[in-house]
Image 1: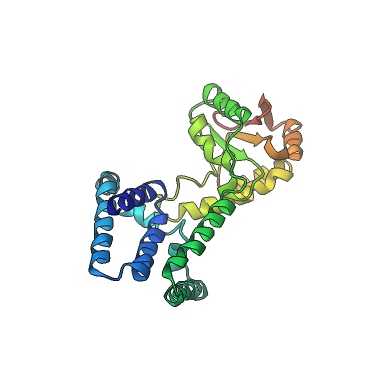
Image 2: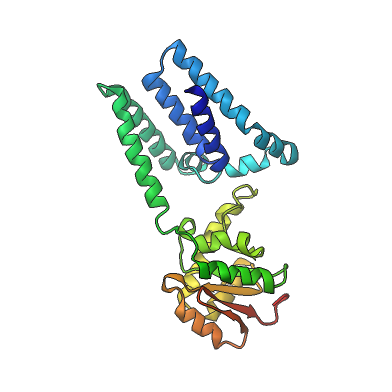
Length: 277
C-alpha cells in the first residue's frame, strides 16, 4: 500500500507541483485521523521517502541547472495555501488557518473517522469539476488555425491571442496556442509559474485586460499595448463560443491591420508597421 501511495503522490507532484502542499497537508491529516501508531508513522515515512525518490530525477536536475529560483517563484502562485502564506492580508492567512483548524477538529469529533473520506471526495470532485468547467479540448478548426500559424508566420512573431474568456484557467485557446503553433503568445500565463518577479501574477492581469478588448475595437488593443508595454505583431481572434464578432469586424476595416487568415477556427491579423508582421 505504501508503494502505491508513493507512486500516486509522485505523479501528483510531477503533474501539478502546486498540489504538493495540499498532498503534504492531506497525508498529515490522514495520519492524525487513522495512523497514530508506530506502524502508521513508518508507513508515512516510507511514502514521503518514496515520493522524494521517484521525483528526484526531475527536481534534482532543476536544482542543478537553475537553483531554488523556479521553486521559490512557483511557491508564490497556484495553491491557495501558498498564496495565503505569501499574501500581505492578515485576514486571508487567518481565514485559511481557521478553516484548517475547523477541519482538524471535525475529523477528531467524528464517531467513525473513516467518514471523513466522504466529504473529502465530494469536495475534490466538486472543485475539479468547477475548476475545469469550460476548459474543453480544442476543436479541429482551432488546431488547424494554430497549425497555419506555425507554418506561415515568422518564428519571431508575437501573437496577442484573444478568446473572449477572461478566466485564464478556462482559456484553452491561449493555453495551447504556444505549444501547437510554436509562436509566442504575449499573454498566456501557463508556463510562467516558474519565472521570478511574480511574472505569473503579471500575466494573469494582462490576460484578463486583453480579453476585455474582445468586445471593443482596434483602438482598445493599441491602448492595451501602450498601457502594459507589451508589443505584438499579430492578433489571433478565436471564433469559438461566438467570440469577438465586433472586434473581428473592426480589425477587418482598420487599415492598421491586415487579414492574413480567416478560417472556421480563427481570424488572424498582422499588425501593420510592426516587425515580422
